[in-house]
Image (cartoon, rainbow, N blue to C red; front, side, top):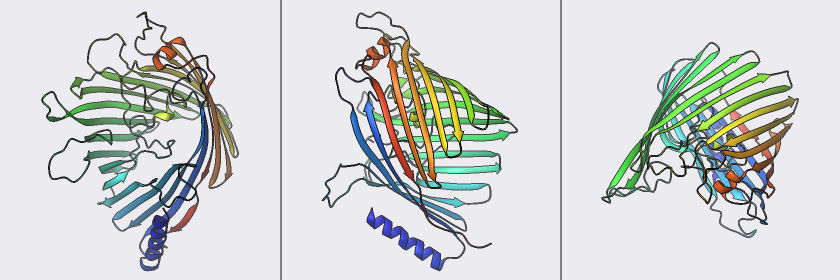
Length: 422
């Protein structure tokens, strides 16, 4: 990481002293986070102890623009405190989170390619997973068309491989897909906003004849937003069809949220989300469970990540009814969010008896304080009150105290910024 830092400072000096028609920014982020996990993602086994640790993300962000080119690079180190010796001479936790270039063809058209974050709408299908210290980025090509300031069309393409071999080799699907193509449109019409996503995702596998095959699944749907004064609302519906590893896909997603700003300090909200699932006794091989794919799933369905954060895929789906109470004044902010979870498909016990669909209630609380313009402290505490159905589905012990607490500091210094005088 030290070599990367020296390299960027050298580049900064070179650009500033030799190039006049440019915009250049160099910034950083240091984000240590303490977590106490005592029933996080799944119910704690009877009598088991949870885990306590500190993780840290360190980033160096480089952005440059000159004439018809934009360039961005994010160097990242993700670690857990103590994961290497205090005398270690080697650190393998470094990576390029982003490394992209964008060609500005006109004031309406551009092409962006390379390692990059892809984020659309509320992060439900495409998000950067910013909560995770490593976050998410894709190797992709994106064509951008902006005919008007309030309208935009993106067309994205990706093709992945494990190496540069001369023969076709089965891809490991390390990125989650062999190939994808999508189109995303967004427009604003007075108080109404509309987004439409058409996504084609391909997974490579060996079929019954041991031949390499790519099956494609389509995710299609609109999202609406509305805002008028203190009132806001949004709704979305996505449908999945096609094939996934030689299985037919038929799944659906529906969501709606309402928000109201009661005063300068208080806000309230309510929401519902439905992700289709598959009955546990359903012998049909079709895929009926909706997959949120590349979304920032930690943002949804409770912050204890019991659903769709590396888990619950291909399961009984989910219905999440939630409410939000928010407070903000000066440098302080806080939120209280209860979630009421139930299965979207049937769950059965050990005797093959159908169980109540109620999975339990999670209560999330978070607070934040802005220490300075570039320093923020955030903390949170969550508790899961699970049912017998949740225990049957997830394992563990619903009667254990299942909690998660965390404290995080975010330092975001702007190291250097330069733009030519107009």
